[in-house]
Length: 132
Image 1 (cartoon, rainbow, N blue to C red):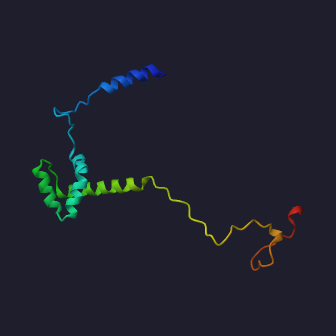
Image 2 (cartoon, rainbow, N blue to C red; image 1 turned 45 degrees about the horizontal axis):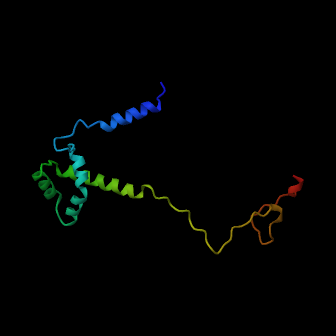
């Protein structure tokens, strides 16, 4: 069944008026514990750098209504750091290696016209190229 541009316009208008079903009276949606930790992660990381132990942070979070165990908090913070690090490196392209300035690229020299400085294991053809 083909979809017309009129249908797309109608869908856009309808979707623009929709309200999420999980909005609370204050206009904020409830979050999972993991989402809350990810939102607080920069602050929690700074607390750890200032010397707070994971258990202390867990106790502070518990006081604020966020019940989480120390291993779970550590796991979520590690996951947050991994995501943050991968986002930093995700769009970087590695540049091509720089060409050395001293040596110019060697031109292809026909096999039967190699300079006399070549010796050793170099194979010379029996017939010239034009006779092949």
